[in-house]
Length: 97
Image (cartoon, rainbow, N blue to C red; front, side, top):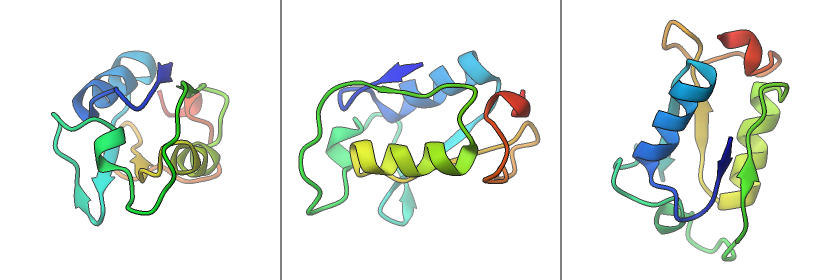
C-alpha cells in the first residue's frame, strides 16, 4: 500500500481497512486528525517537508511501521488490531488480519 503527503487521513484509513482489514489511528499533535486533512497538512511543526511515496507492507512489524511513517511524514499513527485495540509493536501487520 503506497501513500504520499497528498493522501488524506480518511483515504489512509480506508486503504488500511481494504488492504489489511484493520484500522489505523492518525494524529494531529495529540488529537485525532480530521479525515479531510492531508498527511502533509498535519505534519509536526518543524519537520522538514518530505516528499515521495511511502509503502506500508504486511511483513512490517507494527512498531517499525509506525516509526517509519513518523520519519517519512512527520505524522504519528497507531495501528489497531482486529478488535480495534492498539496492536502490539512486535507483530507483523499481516498477522493482524
